[in-house]
Image 1: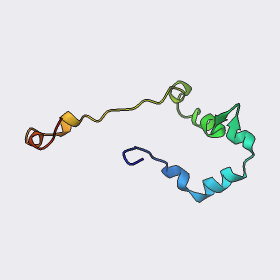
Image 2: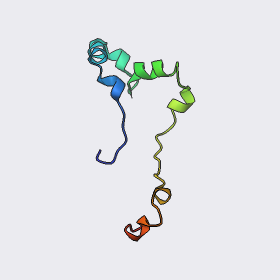
Image 3: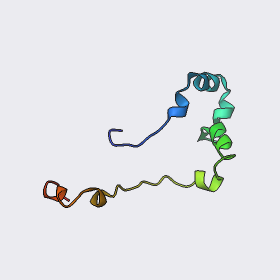
Image 4: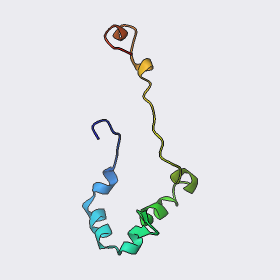
Length: 76
């Protein structure tokens, strides 16, 4: 995780954690799928096609960030 990008801020609210801890397992797992209830709720706001696609990484445009003067100090 030293170079990962992650954001989970909405799930830090203790009321959400306490509520989910009380839910039966059927709401959390269904047919081996984790976070079942959360995904069903999200589908009301984000298209299912977008949510169910495979994970995809992204590249940082390092060449665009480094100026000509910086290139003397960086190996690309």
